[in-house]
Structures are given as structure tokens and as C-alpha cells.
Image (tube, rainbow, N blue to C red):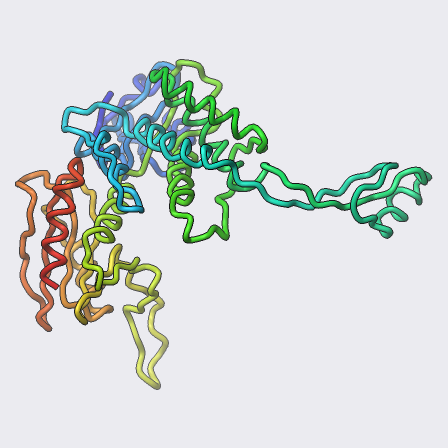
Length: 395
């Protein structure tokens, strides 16, 4: 069966092939990819902001299509360095699965990282030996060896240079999952297998922790890790053992679209403008005067904040089934952000599902701030950049 992002399906228990309560415990259900509710005739499946495949068993699975086919492949083509890979531009007829597009893009970025040599780190290794190497730990030697009669050994600590680092473990885990997804792409599968071999110095973890304390200057590595994160959160590790049977794999299209809009703003904004993440600014929505009870701790978190010529513009990316026909909830959320930031302009960026791409003015609110909807084609990075650039130029 097929359904779209944010879509719904009515299913019977015979189609599911298992009790509804049991299906509610499947990995994709626990991860919030879709919600399964019991109904009078069976069950209702409600999809979140994801695309991919969710499997109930070896015989029944549901394919979740993007609202606009090709969104993931095209949005991934917008890199943090401002470079675009035009060969990835998708058309509306592109049927490459979104999660496969993630795996293909991960392979492209990973090959660059491996060609640049693997990251190595010095780590402290504790060992027991009758041939000491490194610093001898007197305390541990006396308490843990000599006290037990092993007077011919000592405990030593030494620092060794190793490839078993948090970064390499994370990349290896993602590579193993990408290899499973690329089973129908022989050339790419061979390439990812070479990457797995190159990363063999790292230990395999089912759920490795995202590497922290990375250099902000190393944008190429950070991009590879962010794409790896999408694979690790969207492809269950145990699916590697299922052969050709259906397995669950998903990608958050809303998040991919939001990141593409943010990177586009960075690229098209004038050099004198500042583009930041609104969440990181920790601007409060509510305040309290002296003598009043404490205000509710609620912060404004627009996706993008653009500051230019002393003016502030806010953008919120919304990859929704309503397209550019925004809902009242989305509109009021944007207005709350505008008030908190004292912004001069605000806009919702959404896929153009009902009309051609462009900027549509909704009006002005008290204080003169303009409110717009920016409708874009999420499968055309160049056209999306052009529309967003035209809006930023009005600040």
C-alpha cells in the first residue's frame, strides 16, 4: 500500500497480519513515524513528517511517498558549503526512495572523508603484562595483581593512536545501514563496502552516540555526520538480517526541507546580513513585571533569523500537506515569534502544491510587520533560492 507524508490509511486487522496492539509496538510506531489507532473496522494509520517504508511483517508493508516526489534528493543537494550537486536535481517523476537518496548522499560525502584519511585519536589503554610498556600503576598492580599472587605481572597505562574513535564508530554504523539500502545499486553498494572496509579499525555499535566537541570549521565532516544521523535514526539496525524481506526505513522530510531552507538563506543572503538559528537565541515570549508572578517559560524558536540593515526577518519552514495554504496554528505561531523578536518581516516557507512558486503577502500586523507565505518548488534548488532571495532583498 502507498500513502503520502502526513496522510492516513484505513486498515483491517487481516491486512496488518497481526493484532493492532502488537503492531503498535513495532520500531517505527515507537519512533513516532506513524500512529496506529484501533477503529471499529480495524485500525487507522496516521503518518507524521516521514517518507520511506514501514513494515508490519514479511508480507505487508506501507510505502510513504513524499508530498512532492524528489524533495529529499533535491534538498540534500544543497550543502552547507554552498556547493550544489546539479546531478542530483530531481524531477517530479523521480521515484528514488527518499531513504535511498539519503544513503547515496552519505556515500558521496563519506568517500571524501575517507580519501582525506581517517581521523585518529590518542586513547589511554590499560593492560597487564610481564613486559611493561608505558606508565606503571602501582596502586592497581598491588591491589589487583600482587594481592592475588600474580607478582610476575604489572598494570600499565599507555596512550596509543587508534582509529576506534567516536567519529569513525558513527560513520561505520551508518555505512552498514547504507549498504543494506543500496542493495539495488551495484556500483554504489561496492563503493560503500569499500568504505566499510576502510573503517574496519572502528568498533561496530548498534546505536552509537553522536560525536561531540567537533570543530565548527570542519563543515564537510559535520555534514557527513548529520546525514549519518538520518540513517541511524531511520533504519533499524536489526533490519540487516532480513535479506530481501520488507523492512522499515524512514527519513524526516520536514527536517530535510527545513535544513535546505536554512542553507539556502545562508547562501543567498547579502554578505552584510547575518543568518542564524532562531532556537539558539533563547528569546522569551512571555515576561513579567516587578511584583508579578513569574511568567511561563516559553521561548520563540523560528527556524531562521535574518538581520540586515538593522531589520529582522523571520522564516519558518513548513513541509505540510496543506502546502502554501497555511493553517491558523502555523500563522499564529509565526506571529508569536514576530512579537518576541520585534521583527520587521515574517514568512512561512512551504512547498507550492496548489499554485506556482512565489511570495504571497498575507498582510501587516500591528506595528507594521509584514507577514508572507513563500511558496517554493522543493525539487528545484535554484528556483527555491531565487524566491527566497527576492524576499530577503526586501528587508
